[in-house]
Amino acid sequence: MDEVKLNSEPNKKRIPILTILTAIYLVTVLLSPYSPSNNIFHSLFNYCPPFILCIPFVPALAVLIYQLFRKRILRFDAILLAAIISSIPIIFTYEIPYSKNSTSGHWVRVLTHNVNFESREMPELRNYIIENKIDLVYLQEVKGGDESPASYLQKNLPGWYMITERETAILSRFELTDIKSIPLGSLPQRVVLSATVNAPTPFRAMTCHWSVPQFRKKLLRANFPDQHSDYETTLQAIQESELPIILGGDFNCTPRHGLMRSLSNKLQNAFTSVGSGSGLTFSARNLLVRIDHLFSSKGIRPAKCVVEPSFGSDHHALFAEFALEN
Figure 1: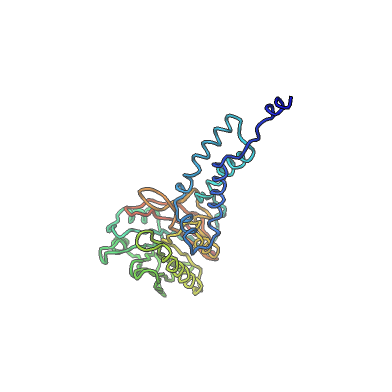
Figure 2: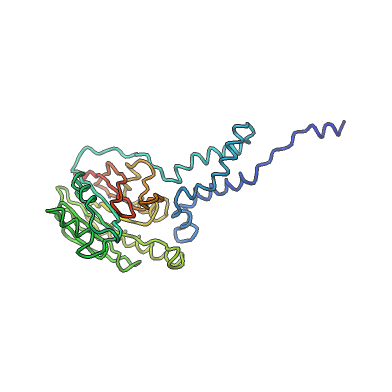
């Protein structure tokens, strides 16, 4: 009798090791943006393209979904399945617009674009600027002197104003005054370039190009001070402005990165506020990450933000429409 009773007891179901490891990995990915931004762990998880971060979920999802259809799924497995599915939009930083469009004040249309040093004449970009009535253009990686994309655009946009310093340029339909350039310590060709835009409601235009931890050129750890220095220099330029600011550029930081999250707490990130989707801007050939951003300070409200074509660069351009509040 005892033997029969023993054999008739149902086996206790144990949580598979794959499920446990997947749960640990999911928690690690979701918490990584809150880790210190000056370590390798933070960079690996917050520079990594979202689709690569999601690859380890594939085998676990296959097993969990199979168990679900076979009605053999454990309660913990079901919770994990729901957590993975709901976390994927977070990992991809998929945005749903939450800011309401402004109906007052003057409007300004801004485009930021890393034009890539290999780009020279950019007729498609020039046509886009005219057709979409762009007011302000930020350019990064401007090289080539008189043959640079910035020089080409200035020659082919009559009446526009341009300022340029090293590899950065600002072009505007409105007059640019009180020009300032603050060197970024990371690389000799990088600066924070800014000027007062004499629009009907004046504001400060500001653009920059931050460094990025290089996995090949030198040890990853050696780059952390450079990028933090870029952040501090940019923050200093923001704090010194007495006018509202529109800041844009190539920050080489994803929205999940600690420095970008910190900057987004001080200024309003246009795509986060009014953009829709993942907003990936790099690279043009294979969209991997969103590292190009547009921000505004108090007194300037974003109303629209979308990713535009690459116009021959390795980055996609980013466009935003702002309301300059009176």
